Image 1 (cartoon, rainbow, N blue to C red):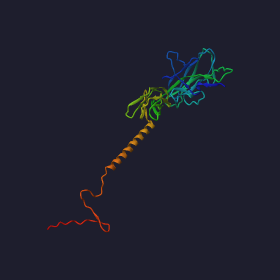
Image 2 (cartoon, rainbow, N blue to C red):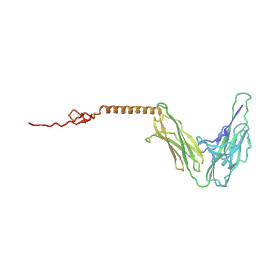
Image 3 (cartoon, rainbow, N blue to C red):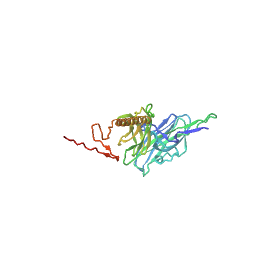
Image 4 (tube, one colour):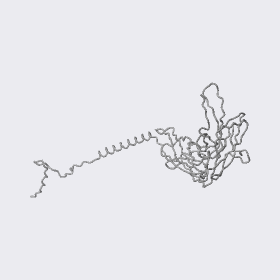
Amino acid sequence: MAAVLVLATTGLLLAGGSDAGALSIPSFSLTPASATGATPRTAFRYDALPGQTINDSVVLANSTSQLEDFQIWASDGYNTTVGGAFALRPFGYPMTGVGTWIDTHLGSAVYGLAGGTSVTINFSLTVPANATPGLHAGGIEALNVTPVAQPAHGPAHFVIHRGIGAAVFIQVAGPVRAAAAVSGISVNSSVPAIGFGSRTADVSFQLENTGNTLLTGKAVATVTDLFGTTVKTFAPVGVAAFVPGGRFTVQEPTWTNLPFIGPETVHVTFTSTGMKEATAQSTFWIFPWLLVLLILLFLGLVIWRLIVWRRKRAGTTKQPDDGSGPDGGSTTSEGPDGEGVEPEPSVATTS
């Protein structure tokens, strides 16, 4: 049985970098119509008013020598939950944003394109009258759905359908607010019970675009000890095409050679042009529990021995307290009835 892998089933990742624009692969490409002109574009970028309609074109080119079939649709844009790459929703996904604003006039039909040719696809983009101010992101996607010949015999295999897209960014007129938040700092540490050996930690945190404009910046995570000394600085993480409402997790490379013991504090700072830096921090403990237990047992034994020694020393130095002594102090004698009788004082006589 053949297994079919369709690249666009979970969303199409667009090219990295601040543009996060169109993609091109060896067999076909999808680019803004003016990409090869005097002012090439890597993505569609518009400033628009609510209710405004914009007309533009995208070029689909088939670089192979044979007829290829494509499915083309408009899509919402988002940031992937891990890593934050800008991506487009797959075909059939319920669109609620820019994917509903764009009309390619092709519907859901499959478009056939001869090898070595290209076609200009005209589309219209209508901004809803009630569109909120700020940045709205989406794109136009093309998926190569050309059937792939199956071998008559053999084990299971995969068929790959490749998809590409051109990003569309619309800045709707109105107040602009650039803001972000850092949250969810998590540390998963691995420390030997005795303390000696390999000590590692995996640090992750979440970034969220809480404003209404596209952000491009960097996140930096550092770790300080109890005395405020920096014990670890992770490499800056670049963030591109961070869309409003986007939220994703940054997973730092595994941290090795942790400090031996003690509280450590992770600090995360995200900076982007035009906004106040977003910061957060979280403290975790490096705790070799078996070593600490042995130390506590040893201290307990020392304290117990000290208490015993002091008690013995106090017992050997205690003085008797019986009211008599060798200095001729008063004594009592026992009477007939068993009661003590004070001796009569002697009377001196003279002759």
